Length: 232
Image (tube, rainbow, N blue to C red; front, side):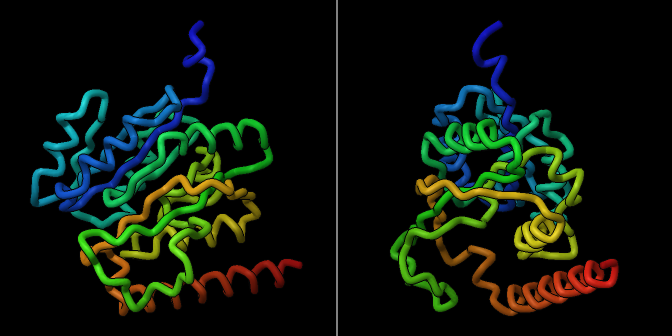
């Protein structure tokens, strides 16, 4: 039996919508991973451009073509199709350092009580994009909670459920909140392993939707806590 066969399979789920500009570089960063036991699933969310064709041209990449239903539904489709016991996410805009998956797999293998491995991320402004007013970070390097920084055990989705498709932007923050409320455990590596690339097409620029969805998420979190307190 080969060494690769004894390593846990990591399924990389990459949702894309109209991402032809940066998708190839994101896929390059997956192909450059030092971890050898990966499968890559690109979920094309009804892109009007060449995103699906770009992904299909990459050896070993599985492409799911879905109607345009948003990033939550695309991630859910990828998780449903994944064969790995560990699931990583990469947004179409972002890049991984070559050791990202290997370091996170090592953490989860060494710490079986953990459900989620995170890492630090570095913000990169593309094409002289000015620092957006909504970005409150004091430094470019921060603890990463965006999906590109996650590695998650498959069993976590069985406990927490899938991404809530009612959220257009904040489905990842909602999932992490539900995971925390459900008692799932996470650990953050000290290394900066993700480049979060900022440009004027990022969903975070829609601040009205972001604020609305954040308030909805916080209300749901408060309601879950009240339910826990009632049970006690």
